[in-house]
Length: 141
View 1 (tube, one colour):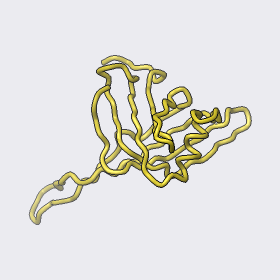
View 2 (cartoon, helix red, strand yellow):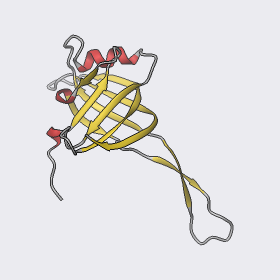
View 3 (cartoon, one colour):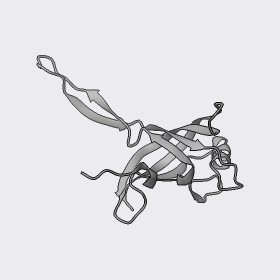
């Protein structure tokens, strides 16, 4: 198994103007992808152990960004505009990067819980919880 440097990861989000924005250079961390799916208990009477039936995906993930207020393309501007957006937006995540053949996770999501973090001695950041609408799609670039 190869060790993969986190710096190569790719994260893009479609902004409120329907333009895909590569926010990778602003990303500090991504947690929660590919995320959980519900397992429904279908254990019958008399069983000696539990059994389950796969249910729906219920994915939420969190991204911490460096605060970047560059007009149109900075993480702070993209997130601010999506916070009030009335439709889910597309995202793409590549844990190894976006080179052809690399693993890709994609879907649509809502900006559900953004927060600006400030700590003396640190850079300003934005931590955002995203809620996936529907199912996450596994694929390759």
